[in-house]
Image (cartoon, rainbow, N blue to C red; front, side):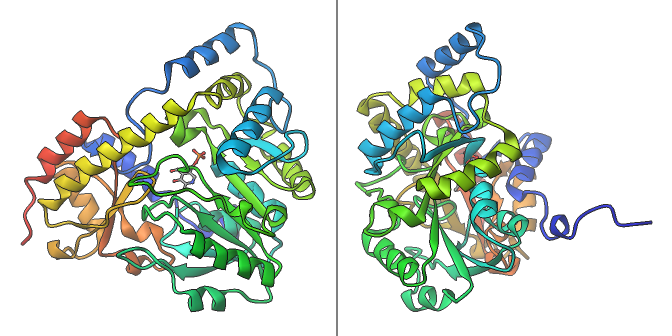
Length: 387
Ligand SMILES: Cc1ncc(COP(=O)(O)O)c(C=O)c1O
């Protein structure tokens, strides 16, 4: 019989992160695997969504995003990111950063071109590249600070490089890229006439005074950067599927075409609510970061009393831990054991590496959870002993 599936689809597996949530549900485990909050989204935003539905905002929004939302994104990105942009020609609203990154790859990268990805990486970037026919080149972020070697980055740029993906604050490492690091990335992008795709979905989740810098604000980068962010993390609404991308008008015209034929548009009433949410005052964003810092500190303190060796994150809501003290055969069997007993779901480190064996001594904890969830996880983790 003919093979009904594509060679592209054969090249990646189902998401390990999303599978760990299914495993957590199956075993009644505390889910510290997938990156979503288990606390409510802001009341004012939820009310705005209900009002929009009651006003019958039920039909397709403008393909590249409701005007109210694009206007709110433009104001917020000028104020916070220092990226001035015209909402009419430079903003595209998508179904999350997930769609945005795929659109960026499909809209800007041709088959055979190369895309540089820092590793460990958020697992979607691999399949995104494959769908676009791109060849990924990986540059390692090394603990304890998840720095990269400038020479390794320089060597990764070739004649075929089209773009580099920069995710800051970073999932899974919690790294926040410094200005000096971003300056080198910018210099190499300009030298090699490449694009940057920045995933800034955790831009407001920063600890200990860390600063978020948007790569597009560095000299020469505005015209070659696609800046992406969204509602999922900052407004605790991962299921609403609202994201956005900001790019030059020329790049945006390609992005909008790809987005149109992929999804037509993001959910119309939720876009209206997102426009309200983006106008929340500075107190909302301060409180978000403060709340996450408390959760981070709680998790780190808990893990300090266990055999896990954990890197303290500077941003985002994940912590990477070394599991070598447990002498497990690998990260996947360790995670499968942990989800069953004592019942805590984490993500095996291998899902963040091109070569799974590179992540075999790592797992990722997610701490975007209520205190009681983290305390229950702590109680269970305290039962663990190294052999
Ligand atoms: C780095 C990163 N980018 C993108 C996403 C997904 O974003 P969205 O919900 O906007 O599709 C996640 C979710 O965990 C993420 O960690």
